[in-house]
Amino acid sequence: MPKTILVVDDSANVRTLVREYLTAEGFRVVTANDGRQALFAARAEKPDLILLDIMMPEMTGYEFIRVYRTDRATPIILLTAKLDESDKVLGLELGADDYVTKPFGMRELVARIHAALRRATAPPAPIEVLRAADITLDKGNRTVTVSEKAVNLTPSEFELLAVLMSAPGRVFSRAILLDQVQGTSFEGVERTIDVHIRNLRIKIEPDPSRPIYIETVFGVGYRFHQE
Image (cartoon, rainbow, N blue to C red; front, side):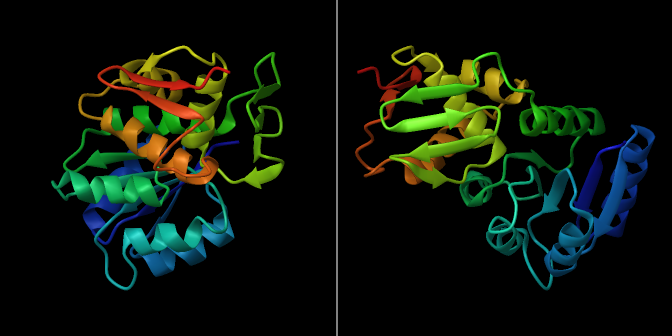
């Protein structure tokens, strides 16, 4: 059964171009021209992945993420014409998994879609449950608890935490984490790891400003604290 992709953009030309290309690639494609319409489509169609423009009438991409993330953890890739890095970072902080800057190449877009879908549907590894400090990560059920309290993570955040918890004390560079989590190494996206780490800390750390689980190794990357 083909994966369903929801394409949200206020440009009819972009929606048509992306729909035709993804359809030829074997996806089922649903479209919406603003965030409000996208909410109805997402709740009705339950897409496997969402391609989301940021600047739209009625409801922006940012507003869509804020509302939709309370419903589901569907992978979201931002389609952004904004050049300011802070705009992209804001989308990632709200819960997007990745971004592609317009104008984008269709082959790169499809590669990012496949990477995001692999993260969201990855089969469980031989070791089903990881435990470190007060955190338990169940790969089979894709659940995380901190001090026995459930924590809701996006697919990217879940995979990133799983990589770090798989080897407490080992330092992972941003490039390695990006390859492990996304399976891609496109130039300029290592910055997304920093945003995902920040989001993870907000969700799992008692005091995100003074992390005790995920440690920064300055100039290198990150590691999970080894007791």
